[in-house]
Length: 430
Ligand code: ADP
Ligand code: MG
Image (tube, rainbow, N blue to C red):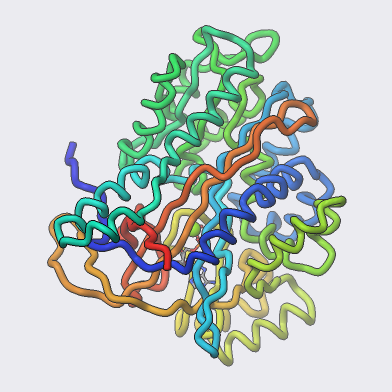
């Protein structure tokens, strides 16, 4: 019941053009990769085996995954909306390199709001008398790209009267971001409904051919369901019902698992990308070029060694649990304390270690409702939206769908816009 403007930077931030282009160029490869992982039961089973022994949330997702596979999938059309996030790592010689932070395969947000941020910054630059600079800001409309992919999946589902269901939070925090995408669907004469897990639990049902509900649902677009707090027993039951249905899930549970930090770490091992993407050596090279160092903390000699290295030099690393949504990672002194505590226990396995990316800071103003205005040293994170649709074994759509730049003050190690740390920004290519 309280509406605030989304936080944003006063000015656009400089982004190296070559790295921006590199991030766009690798997006279709990442789409292919995520889709390949989601279809590879052997890989998911092996990679997550150690994690699901100690992480209850991943284990519960995995149980549903196995259950729907056993029953056989009713779904034949697959829709992926992901966002691959990067920072610009500053090398010792001062050159910046594109390094992936993570890929989000569920509820990747801010595609809607960021479709408007370039307009804001264009106006600010004009007010400052910088008309020429204003004209250089790129157009960007992820809402359209996301809606285009949802519409494609809806069409292939093949029922004119079926609806798209946005699966949303109990308490609405980012509704306008979702409305931007929703509006694009209404413009295409596709009906959209908004439901919570609880609504699905109370009123949802499957018919004999596993169609969802009286009002048939063609596509379920999750903007919820990525953290343990989203679930109680009833919500888990609702999730299972949705996964068992014929509806196109964005993402299906396999694709959500493909986005775990443990999978990301496994991808960095020699040979893994080649096995997942046979016949795509160039895609493999492009993908690998964006990887930072990632390390397993599984039990054994290797895990012992890297744990000891991180305890001795915590500022080189980030310690990550299998969680999404920002604010979960550990840095510096805290990383050291936690790792010291768990280094000899199986709990260690629920985390991965990653090299810390160190971008070059720049000055900007972060505008946030009810916050004082001050200039801050900031770093930025670039996200590229990717969308794909697969029907059976055939990829019918695979493209990049726009970008997101988020900027935060350097004193915050972690956290995105929703976590109240980063703000919306626009890249100014240099
Ligand atoms: P989440 O799934 O919670 O969003 P991320 O892996 O995206 O987890 O990390 C959250 C935030 O932490 C990122 O947006 C980034 O600001 C910071 N971060 C994550 N990994 C690194 C890293 N390797 N180096 C520096 N900062 C990082
Ligand atoms: Mg993130």
